[in-house]
Amino acid sequence: MKTNLVLVILAAVCGALASQRARGAESEPPNIVIVYTDDVGIGDVSCYGSSAIHTPNIDRLAADGLRFTSGYASSATCTPSRYSLLTGSYAFRNPLAEILPADAPMLIEPGSATLPELLRRAGYATAVIGKWHLGLGRGGVDWNGDIKPGPLEAGFDESYVMAATNDRVPCVYIDGRRVEGAEQDDPIQIDYRKKIGTIPTGHERPDLTRLAADPQHSGTIINGISRIGYMSGGRAAWWKDEEMADRFTDRAIRYVTEHKDKPFFLYFNLHDIHEPRWPADRHRGKSGAGGRGDAILEMDEAVGRFIDALERLDLRKNTLVIFSSDNGPVVTDGYEDGSLENIGDHDPNGPFRGGKYQVWEGGTRMPTIVSWPGTVKPGVTDAMVCQVDFLASLAELAGASVPEGAGPDSVNVLPALLGRSDKGRDELVQQGNGRMAIRKADWKYIPAGPRKLPAGPKHGGVGDPTGHSDMPAEAQLYNLADDPGESTNVIAQHPVVANDLAARLKQSLQSPTVPSK
Image (tube, rainbow, N blue to C red; front, side, top):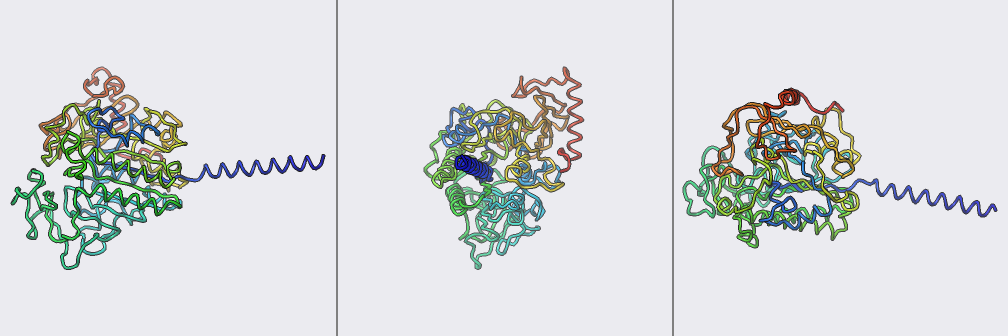
């Protein structure tokens, strides 16, 4: 009898220990990857309804993940969205957070409690690969020495980036704090006001360019494409546009391979499908939709190559992957690559109005997919989430504490991201060029403002081939459940709703939207 009792007790203890070990394994924080694309609209991805251009690899990510119908960037332009994602703060709170030249000072104060910094404190290795576009240095960057502050001062252990955008000088990669491949006897200089050096410009020699460009993009010719601004030197370090997607993807695969035995956070920023679009030869001319369509194919292939690498390394089931874009689409915005002429039936913003630069839904409502096989149940959700929420949500997932005052606009929507709740954030401030808006539940309010907006598309925004960024000057109210395309202003029928949202927007613009932590 005593023997049986001892056996029963031993079995119970062993079972408890096994259960504890299992719970411990499940509670280990996953690897986290954000795959961030550029200028990709919700209608550019076939799992969101694109029928003219197919994205099988992104569709595969969605098939075993959760697809959001109300996933947002906080802004309709790139630098502000990237700032919000990393800091958990709406970009309009920083007056310098606008589309930056490459030589602008870094927007993020070194040592700030950014998303990568919080994850690093929780034991994660952290890296950024691809587009940066958040400023470098303190102004007057010396491209021939150590470039800092930069990503390594913003919470990342490793960094391999382009300084700004692929249509701006300097056209080089920065590995850590140094320009990759630079030679001392060919120093790099850039200027955004006047020509420097002897390299031809698009203004002088348009016959030397592969793509015709507008005056703004007709500066120094690098790799057969004229850019914004002027550059001299650094010839051995110049990038080749047709190799860029492979370069960034290879580096991302190398990173996860080297860090597969420790939790890592990778902020993987593809340059596609930003202009100038000059993809690899295997993609050029294959979409039938001009350079933009070809760049979508290249972007999709890069996503597929990266996901395949995670599977080969047996990392897929312990890696949370978030796919999204920094702002809405623009068909052509500086270069003539056949995108506007060959767009055909393709609708980059799907059912939504507007695109890049604009406060319409097409400017900020992004393709957003969360995939974590075995943990996130596949499906579709209407929960409203925003990239500004990644800081609070992913910190919670990683067991990282968020200091008081950090991430002032970041809402913890982790249950929604993991598909465990159909409720995300209650309301959202949307930022366009020259206009703001607020969405609360199904209602969206846009206050009165200028009709002609600054710095909009110059050569044809989505749904606006003339390139004008006009919108009604009067205040507007839309019910997005009934009218996702924002075609019918119902402010006259619902003045109480409009007044409430106007007050909420004013309050949000003046103070953080999340109670102090």
